[in-house]
Image (cartoon, helix red, strand yellow):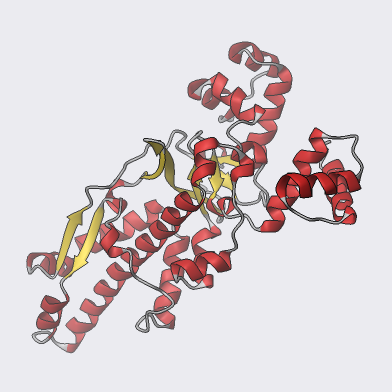
Amino acid sequence: MVNRKTLHISLSKNPSLKINAKIKLAKLFTMNDDEILNELNNIEKDPLFIKLKKLGVIKISTSKKFIEATKKFEGVYLRSSSSHTPEDLLDANSTTVEVIRKIGEEKFKEFFLTDCIIDNSKIADECKISIEDVLRIKELVNSVYIAEELQPQNKILPEKYYSCVASIIIKNKRPEIGFFSRDIWRNLYVIDELKLEKLKSFLKPKEKQRLKGIISKIKLIELRKTSLYRLLEFIISYQKKYFLTGNFMDLKPISQKEISQKLRIEKSVLSRMLSNKSIILPWQTEVKIKDLIPNKKQISKERVYILINKYPNLSDLEISKKLLQKYKVKLSRRTINQYRNELKRNKKI
């Protein structure tokens, strides 16, 4: 884990973070961990960086609290084209997740995450599940995931897909963050400001400019790291009950504006952080990080969906009353009817 002492940086209160720096930081937030690692490798190969390290201006410390995680399905990414994450992925107790657990990691990858054409009946026999289960899992996987090997040769993945940054691990009944990229999240770059200022007095204008560039890049990468860590730390604390139970209805609503205020991070920067990042849940399904901070409307809608499916014979008015009684949420009969029609259009009832 990242050293907690470094987690006090505030983007909204940092006057030195000028417009050009914000643009660079925004770009860093859209990069995945492999791209960030490549940036760091290039920095560390720079003769100036090597010199700064020898002089003690820059030190690389190691966080003892770092937890490493292993991504189970390398080369499989979350699609960005899917605007709504299926509840099946968010609910640890959903039928689909239970079937995937029953299949096991090896067979799930072999039969559902490859481009090989295999007859559904053979998949059902090999995995010891029904053909209906096979079709349901295929529909889920095809709508949510994209596999690297399914792309044409010599072509990169679509410009926008979700980069998985971490996994939520349950330890001693507490959710914790496990990171996939050891070299990014374990190493901390510490700059000795006094030595830096002393060094500047001996440098020529061009050398000072180069020094400014490399120091600025390191600080922005560290800022990206600490900001993202603070966001994840907040989420696992705020949604602790949900991560422990796996029950979708334990997700608590919160707006991006509220998170922005609590973490003292500009809303535009927070939006960038959430734009293409995903995370592995304790039950090993991958979801967008922004799925873990639903607003009140999203939660209310899902609660209505659950009640309609559970009590299909109740009228809209009766569902409205039950919603108020069970969840203390007040919705009009007209709104309930609107959600019911959405369910019918999506063939969920």
